[in-house]
Amino acid sequence: MTDRKTELAANLAKVEERITAACAAAGRERAEVTLVVVTKTYPASDVRILSELGVRHVAENRDQDAAPKAAACADLPLKWHFVGQLQTNKVRSVVGYADVVQSVDRSRLVTALSKEAVRVGREVGCLIQVALDAGASGRGERGGVGPDGIEELADLVADVPGLRLDGLMTVAPLTGEYAGREQAAFGRLMDLSTDLRRTHPAATMVSAGMSADLEQAVAAGATHVRVGTAVLGVRPRLG
Image (cartoon, rainbow, N blue to C red; front, side, top):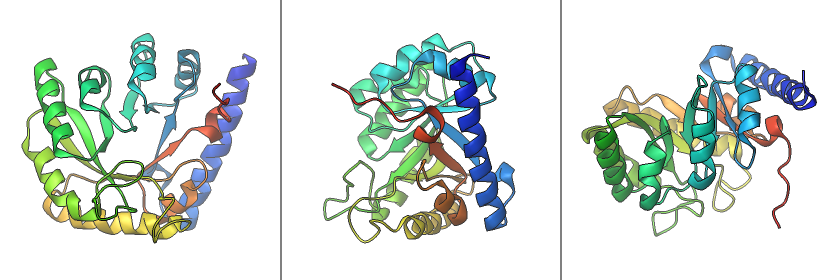
């Protein structure tokens, strides 16, 4: 076993222990929570090691990094999630490899994703990114649509061809009433998920929590946690 594989295996084991303990504390089964490893800035060789260690869900947030990495790992049994803010001019590339786009936050993006998914004959899962720090603009600092915009966007995703409405995603906000209150933020997302499932029963996915706050997300009821640093290590500073 290489040094890097040993390192990643140890890190994965620690994250697994944290998720298992959080599930036990919340009275949930471990199988209810899916680990998505965020591999941004790390090479395809790390993705290959993670696959060997049993990881099946990986995430990226920049298409220029993700596209070549996904191509290099096309032989692996992986499900790719796109979690970054997505510009419409990148949709054609992203639809080529992403199984799930977790950052759907505007109607123009839905239209573009649908058109491309139909063109290439794929079905792409979509999560509505919810901005719990949305101000008067209805948008969040890190993308996302305010809670008032979920229903309209969800209905659009559900109605267009090539897309599948899977659920909701959020990032713990840095400003506003939920800043520093991760548990409350994730609890609010679960309430919004309950509302969504009244009209879209199959939209059961709730993606919340990262390396620092995965326990709070599991306690709130998240079905997917997005963990990068705790598995892969602290990313080197650029420049």
